[in-house]
Length: 427
Image (cartoon, rainbow, N blue to C red; front, side, top):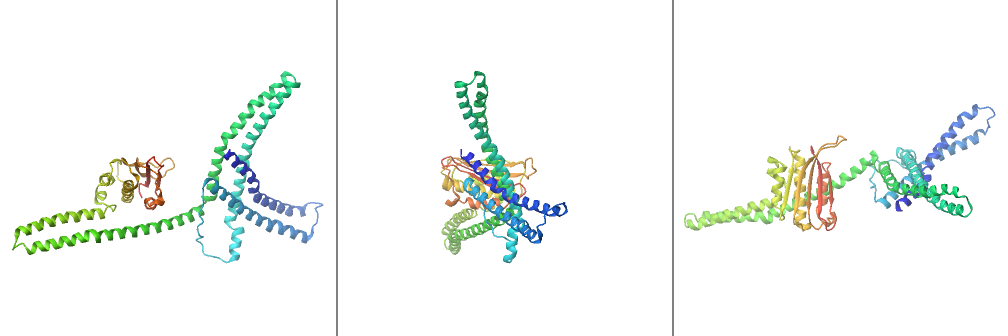
C-alpha cells in the first residue's frame, strides 16, 4: 500500500513535472504561428506592440518559467528520493571559477544544467504518468468494476433475466484479477522509478565527477590522518620499547666487555643475557612492524603471507587461497593490509571463535570489466560492526577505494560479520 501511494503521488506530481515541457511547446507553437500567419490570407494584424508583448511572453517569460519550474521539479524529486529511499546527493562546491552575478544568473536560467533539468523533469513526468496511470487504472478500475458488478448481480437477481448475470459475473472475476496484477506490478514500477531518477539526477557525468572530487578529498584527508597516526604509533613504540631495550642491550654488552679479563664466567652470563635481550628486541620490532609490508609478501605473494598473518591472530583462522597466479604488488599489498586489519578487528571487537580468510580471482563478467582480487573475511562473532565505533572500517574503505576497489561489510547483530574487498587485479 505504501508503494501504491507512492505511485499515486508520482502520478499527481507528473502533471507538475510536465509543465516546463508544455511551456516550451507552447512557445515553439507560437513561433511557428508568428512565422506563418503573415503569409496567410485574412490573417489578423495585431501590430508591432501586440507582437512585441507576445514575443516577450513566449520567448522570454515562458522559457524562464520553464527553467525555474524544472529546477523546482528536480528539487522536489531529490527530496522525495532522500525522504522515502534514503538516496541523498551531496552538494559539492562548484570547481569552476566564480563569475559575476549576471553570468551566474544567466547560467542558472539558460545554462546547460537548466536545459538538462527540463529533460529530466519531462522524463520523470512521463514515467510517473505511465506508471501511476497504469497502476491506478488496474487497481481502481478493477476494484470498482468488481464492486459495481456485485451490485449488478443483485439487481439482475432482483429484477433481471437469469441470462443477464453472465456479464456481471465475468467482471467480478476479472476485476480483482486486474487489481492484483496492478498491486504485483507496483514494486517493479517503483524500482524502475528509483533507478531512472538515480540515473537522471545523480549519475550525470558532471555530478559523478564533482562527487568523485569531494570523495577523493575526504578520503585523502582521512588517509593523511591515518598515516600520521601510524607514524606516531611507530615512533612511540620504538621510543618506549625497542629503543629502551637496545639501550639495555648496549649497557649489558659494555659490562660484559669490562669483565672479560677479570671475571670470564660473569662476562659469559652477561653475554647470555644480551642474547636474550636481543631476541626480545627482535620480537618488539616485529610487533612494531605488524601491518607493514612484510618480506614474505614481496617474495612469495599473498598465498604465503596470509597464513603468516593468520598465525598471529589470537583466534583460530582458516585460510583458503585460490590464486593460480599473482596479482599486482599493489593489489597484494592492499589485500594483505585489509586482512591484517580485519583480523585485528575480530580480535578486539567480534568475540569470535572461528574466522575464515579467503582470497580468489573473480573474472570481469560480460561487460568487459577487469578481473578482481576478492578477499573475504568471515567470523562468527557478535556482529553489528559500526564504522563510527572506532573499528577501523573507514581506514579499510579508504585503502580499498584508493585503488578503485569496493569494500562491503555485512554485519547483522548477533549474526557474525562478512567483510568483502573487491580489488582490481592490476591495481
